[in-house]
Image (cartoon, rainbow, N blue to C red; front, side):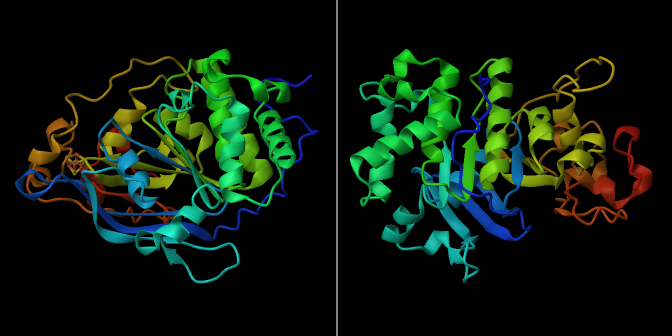
Length: 362
Ligand code: SF4
């Protein structure tokens, strides 16, 4: 018997690509605006981030911090009035050839690479299925668009394989979306995204609408599939505690910028930015004794009237004079052994200012 959330051994999966540590997607200095003229707001300001082969990169932050804008801009799926006003998004091909700038790629090449190189499971994916088509038809349509040489029988067979891979009985291929539970519909969306064995899978809040048990099953399944197939994942969520469990690295976003970035394990044990600390304190701890959830006071800033200096200073319990006038930039902490850690906070410039919860220990 196969437990929901595990891949049956009988399902063929391609050999895993190795997690080589080589970049697969490199976002450089990406800037996105919403609106035009006087109404224009900067939704992303100079964001740089690299996804490596085979890794899970978590993007966390409150609603409106720019997580979804970042990935939709990086895949050129940003709807109007979103406008990419600067930067590059380099995709490194599997054969080691020259990287392609996705933002300047011709439309036909971009269409070809979508789903095949980079696939997305959209926010609210449970409602993304067409209610009047059987799920098998929806999966095979996606395959037919990219693999015109496959016969109908081959496409159907592939759809059955994909359903098995995500823990759904292959005979459900003839089911309509309304005949499936919320968790099953979400799994169908994951199966569709993996239909062409992409190298990058982007998941935009894939488990938000699910109960915690189903959430865990889906997350475990994504990681199991990643281990077997070797794709890299960008996992977007507001639940940083979930990322601690699944991500290799985490980038924390606030008001359109990355404010902390580093390995998931060290970020959990030692957050360096007060906002990361606040996010961690907004969810029950995964281990250890119960503690009171403190959350973060206030709400994210209006992008049309951003605070001066550090964008987080009106909500930061550790703010001091400099914070309201000078904007900190994302920089390495300088702590020995933390070369892969970056923080945008003045406290990290001067260890004597650090409050106990953020105190640096190597
Ligand atoms: Fe808080 Fe100042 Fe650090 Fe901003 S720079 S997070 S206001 S301590």
